Amino acid sequence: MTLPRRALRATAPVAAAAGLLLVLSACSGGDATDAASGDAVTAGSDFADLAESTECADLREKNPDLVGTTKTNALNPHTPGYEVINPDNPDEFMGFDIDLGNAIGACLGFDVDYVAVGFSELIPTVASGQADWIVSNLYATEERAQGGVDFISYSKVFDGVLVAKGNPKDIAGIDTSICGLTIALNKGYVEIPLVEAVGPDCEAEGLPAPTLSLFDSSADCVQAILAGRADAYMNDVNTVNRFIAEHPDDLDSADTVMLDYEIGIGVLQGDHEFRDAVQAALTVVQDTGLQTELAEKWELDANAVAEPAILSVG
Image (cartoon, rainbow, N blue to C red):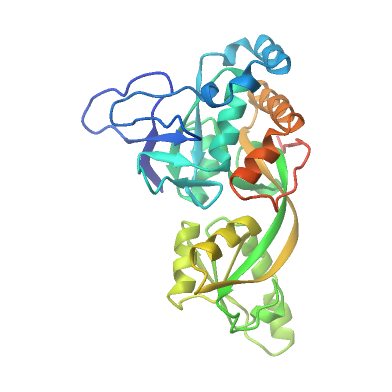
């Protein structure tokens, strides 16, 4: 379900009218947007050096239709390090993906606003035209691409397994150690079929299959473990480590699993101009070392940079 939250357009004041969506903005450094006043900073203000580079200037010349526009990012703002609502200012988003999207926008000359949705609604939101792209720690898979988006990958995937402190159920990974246990996952997660695939192996050993408990956000999954209603949760290892840092007395990591996926930016299938421009800008971001800097800033250094590649089923 779409949550009624949208960021300020980055260069225009908010229209004053009853019933408008709750305004949220992006925070990527010291130049935070003041949502209450309607003032906003452009995506380029935090990445002026990148925007002024020869490579980005060339890309803006090649893609003049993008310059001066605003692109709406569909995101699920409940993944620490990647995208969350700023705990010090509920009118702001913050995280690696916020910075990455703003850097790409700065390079190509467009600003970014946001619409917050449930995780399973990310792709439908873009496919239906309610948003232009997804920069939200989304694993790029062919199955997801069939929902109406193309992906531009930018990072390899290492999954962590979040468990209660001390790993009391002796969980070793996405294997028969989870037989008979309850696994909390976000709706639409790629880990769902991986957990389901363990079922037959459990039955072969005379054990019950794991039970899936599905939620709309990572935060809800973690709360299920904290409340004793779930035994484990799988997600990007950086995300898992951030949740452990927030609850060091209650949570642990059971294992780290490398999955055969990459994290990607989703754009509307068929919008090749935008897709290819994002890929080119992302290449510049990586070549300058900015992606690595942003990963370190948000304590995501366990992620491995992946060369931007297109995944399309269209």
